[in-house]
Image (cartoon, rainbow, N blue to C red; front, side, top):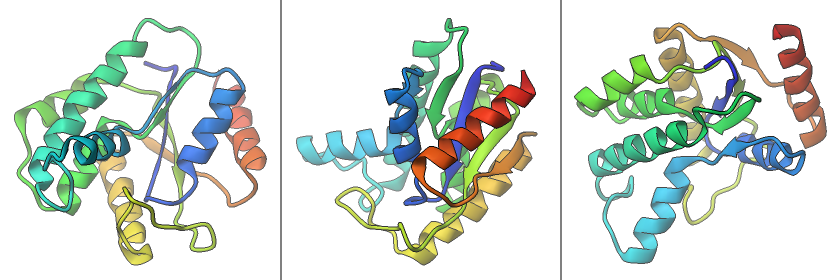
Length: 180
């Protein structure tokens, strides 16, 4: 889907803040599934979280990401995704998990705009919270794994420059105008 725009990168690099700003500008946005799953699992005392069962967490993310995709598949305007199925591939590689058949299938079938916006690690804004337990070094490693994952599936990465939320949003929207 040429109108499905992915924002990716390591944790704590500003993706979600930019998604929230885009949402405030009335763009449809799909929230990050990993955070949603962690919150739900903690609330229900489940174990499909990265610090207990990485494979179960990954499989839950696959199911949720497919739901995200299906929710917006009939939209014609730009839809912004806080990560995508390709991020789950990157997570799988990062954690050295077995590749599931569903993951490979969806990485091939769920298509997005070939230009992907990637947020580089930014120590000055990096913070931990109840769902984000990685240290900054792990966040940087995740960033590099996302580069590999997106390149593997033929996407072109556009690095988001460091700046205010509004500057980052403007950069994305200006780039999208040149693609149209």
